[in-house]
Image 1 (spheres, rainbow, N blue to C red):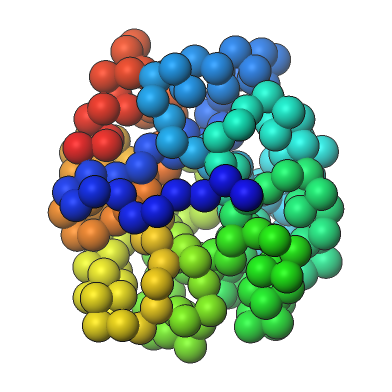
Image 2 (image 1 turned 180 degrees about the horizontal axis):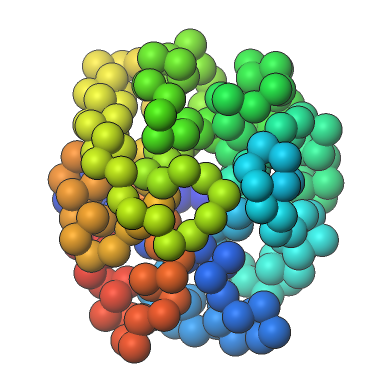
Length: 224
């Protein structure tokens, strides 16, 4: 399994969101982002029910797996993610993140993700307080803080996410789990720096990174 340790202090891993890639030539974008310094690839899976948008499923994830050796982190914005864990494991996904707000039995679903050989992630929407995921911090390998409402790109960064990152970092330091802190939504060089300073380990960036004139420079700015 491909996965990443904690990054060096003051830095973050860079995760391009492939939802902003050119799907007519996605292998070229994957190769270009890898050359630019991407550390892992982020896959946004939306079911048009949990969020009002529809993207892709395990079939596309398997195609990305064939095109890249980087760790693949899939974010399931799905009402019933527990019904689809096996297909994502077979597609070669390394880390699978579910939402605490989904209808899934969270603890059981996280356990099954681990049994299938994937890293276990949990995510929360901007309006969901950190207290909602506290019972699961010792059961996950990653916490994904959403700094926009999940479902669409191009939204403004929600400052509440920085406060959540800082709280999660404090709780991790206090021994309440061993997990990477991931952040997604409105991430650019400025918002990314604020998230890094608060304790984020992974910065997911879509349109800002993929549309940059110099992707290598943009990735370096995110990494810190």
